[in-house]
Amino acid sequence: MDINTFIDNFAGQLDETPADQIKPETNFRDLDEWSSLVALSIIAMVDEEYGVTLKGADIKSAVTVQDLYDAVKSKM
Image (cartoon, rainbow, N blue to C red; front, side, top):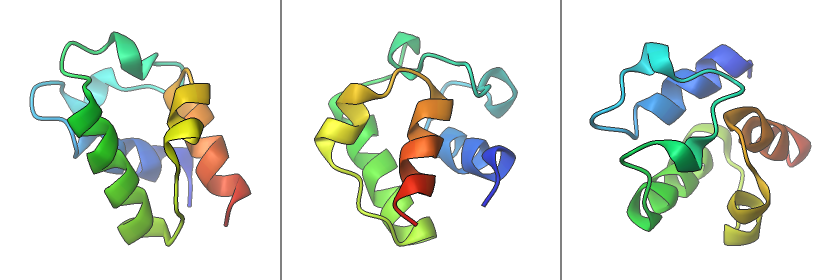
């Protein structure tokens, strides 16, 4: 798993934000379309793609896409 693949998978859960606007340092909560539904989609994507169970607390403690990536990587 690398950060670029994770970003592509993350961006795939978003309908309105182009993938090229998502960077490791992106504060995902600042995205216009960020919602609890998108958070659930991210949790499901991580489970399906990486076999890792993210909890709500993992998402709450993360600020950037890099933080989410690090959380997933630490559980692999």
